Each structure stands twice: as C-alpha cells, then as structure tokens.
Length: 576
Image (cartoon, rainbow, N blue to C red):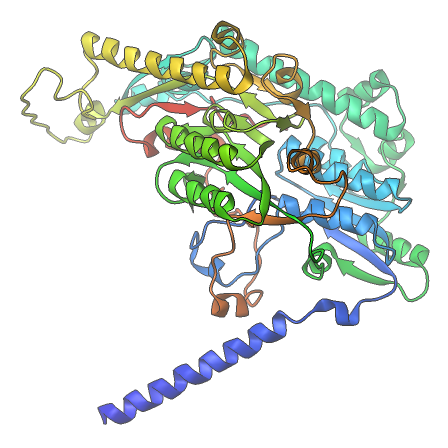
C-alpha cells in the first residue's frame, strides 16, 4: 500500500512539474509576434513605485506574483517608446500616488523626452494633490473627470514626537547624537522640534515648494507668481480648474482613452506600459553596465521587508550584488542607485568598503533617488560622480543612538524585576536601567569618534577639507538642489544622466546602446515565475505600509540593538 501511494505521489509531482513548465513556456513567449503597427501606450501610475523588486520571500504570495514595475522599468519603457515608430501616443492615468519627488522627476523626464519626439501625451488626473498634478502636468492635454475636486492647496509635512506618550507608558529614552541638526533623537526625547531642527525642515519644505511652483508654471505656461496664487487659492472643482488654466478639459477616464485612440488612427491598439516593457529586446552585442540598487533602511544581514519596518537593504545582500557586478567581466561600469534614509552605521561602513573595491576595478557612478541621506549618503562616498535630483533628500551627515528603558512600563504592568551584575558598566545596555552620567559620557565619545570617521569618509570622497565638510554636515538634511553648490553632489539629474556619466567613465560613445544588468536579480524559481499573474495584484507595498510613517519612525529605533550607532535621517520626511 505504501509503495502504491508513493508511486501516485511521484506521478502527481511529475504532472504538476510538467504543467508548470508548460505554463512558464507559454507566459514567457515573445510578445513581438503580435506586435501592432500603431500603439497607444496606457500607463496606469501605480500607487507606489519602488527602485527594485521586493526582497525574495518578503511576503508569502509574492513568490507567485509577476514582478511589478520599477522606476527603471517605467523610465526605460517610456524612453524606448519615444523612439519607437509604432508608438503614437501615451495616456497616463493618475489617481493617488505615494512616490517621492525624485521618482516623479525621473518619470517626468522620460515623459518629456517622449513629448519632445513629437508624440502626444494625454493625462487623466482622477485624485490626489500636488504630486499627482506634477506628474500629470507634463501632458499635452490634462483631463479631470467632472466630479473630481482638484486638491491643489500647497505643501505640508508633519513630524511626530513620542516623548509625552513614552512618559505616560513609563518608558525612558536614553539617546545621544552628534550634529547640531541631527534631530532623529528628538522624536523620542522631545515633545516638539528644536530650533535647529525646525530651521532644517522648513528649509527643505521651502526648496521643495519653490521647485514645484517653478516646474508647474513652466508646464502650464504661467508665471511662477500666478501659479503660486492658484495653489494658495485651492482646492478647486473641475470647472474652476479649467477656467484657471490648471487643466485643459473635463472628461471621464474612458473618454480620454477613446480620444487618444481616435487620434492615433484606424487600426491602433491600446497596450499597457507593463506589457510593452515585457516585449522589449535588449540590443545585441552592446556593452553592459550594471545598476545595483540600495533601496530601504540599511541594516546588517540579508535584505528583507516587513509590515512594521518597511523595506530593509541588508549589507550582506548588497555587498554580494556589488561584488557580482565587480567580478563580471562584461560589466564596463557600475551605477549605484540609492534610495535610502540610512540606518546602521557599521553596515553602511561595510557597504562603503565594497563600493571602494568596486571603484578600484571599474568606474562607479552614484545615482540618488528620493533619499540618499545619512547612511545612504555614507555609502555614496565610494563612488563618483554623484548625481541627484533637485528634490532628492541627502546629506544628514551625523549619527545618533541609544536605548529605551522599559522598567517603568513593567512596573505599571505589575511586573517585578531583580537584576544581578558584576562590573561597573554591566548594565549599560540593559533595557531596565538608565545610563549613568559616566556611561552617557562614554557613549557620547563613541558617537563622536564615528562622526569624525563619517566626516573623513566624506572629505576623502568629495575632495574637501574636513572642516568644510563639518560646516555643511552636523546632521542637516539638504535637497539635491541645495547640496550641489555645497559640494555634496556633482550633477543634478536622474537615471539617464547617471547612464550617460557611466558611458563616459567606461570610454563608450556618447548615446551608444548599452545593456543594463540590474541587481538585485529576480530570485524566484522557474515554477514560481510560471504562476506569476495568477494571483490578485494589490498595492505593491500595502503590507509594508500597514503602519503610518510616523509610527514606523518609532519602530525604526527598536529594530536595532541597544547602543547601535545609527546614521539615519531624522523623522520620516514626507512632503505632500
């Protein structure tokens, strides 16, 4: 009986394997076989847009889902479409996006190239505020459904302070920092912002608002003063927005699709940008560049993702990717693409060391996305040139760290504690004791030493005097626009500018075809890819964003061991 059961189990496994292989072959078939002669691209802007696919095994069902569009997929697809004679136009549908300003700028730049090729862009804007409008405003025709409120009313950001709540819980924060503007500890130690922190954050908000106004004014053919007045007078309904020149027409979403199809001519076929990108072929025989993505907070170990901490770029995983790009002989240059607010300082230093090794073997160009701050800026020091978007948040050169004492919380819960120690500082990292004055001084000195190391890394990487670095450091966050005149970045731009710099560094012809090898790679097995697309495709980071950003800030301090030196950007700077 057991032998018979084993036989049928074996047969079932073989049958399932055969089905999965057949499905994989079918789903991987070339899409160029049915390529239409006239294509209208439809880009449904996703609610979130990441720099890379989720770490392998991030969530249970993700192993079966098709890889979602990344920033590179969107930018690459739109730029290829700009020079594809079959593609006649693109329709963008925007309805609530949670992208950072630098990612919007990268996609917008690709859309500008599409438009410069003489191809029309239609945008349907169905919800959201300034970020959504910024993306849609690149279009020749911006349409809004009749019932949509045009939520243009300016920008704001909120920082949360937990000290009052921690006091009520009986939790005592024991944190220290180095840098006048290194305000990360203020979330735990204060009930409101210090004057330096407020000045830094308001400076970032001012620069972001000015960039927004100038960009929108140019897109809509208005003066900056007029556009600013429109923002400060909002929100508006659809008819008012049209009369003020903020939009071009009032149309339902499907009507805009129909308009684009009619203008493309008889025989036109509407195709999603995702499908179009899947059907693209890489140029045969072209030299290779590698783009290694560091996306998420920096920590030790493997890259991972969770509902509480969001995306974590593990030093072990990133170093493996950098090493693979360095050792691959076909790769002529490496682009290090950073979208990180920083994290564990030791992990950042280990990554920096591998970037240095890469640079000894071949050129390393740094491309900054929404964030390349603190530890994210630290790892950039191994490469050059450094390219940032004007709205990239960078700098934050400083460190902090500490621990929480939860003894008071335990007492409130009626839990007793008995501690036995041998050694003057045996309880220094205990979660049930505050630092003694001597321990606080020891830890402050430890942070000071790492801060000096940080300054030295920046001074060497940027060819600046240490004193000059210190004058723009002190934990202050800068936009890319403000960082450039201060010597912290070299050029303003996005992925395409980084590729252009990599071509130059690799002694390739300007504008020549290249193949971009992406890291991290898709680690799903064949049978997992075979079933991709069988499951619902929810918001790609819904689980990772289950907690509000402000609460994830509190969780961020708890994910690192007590006493870790953290090169992490203060707060979660989210400007909407």
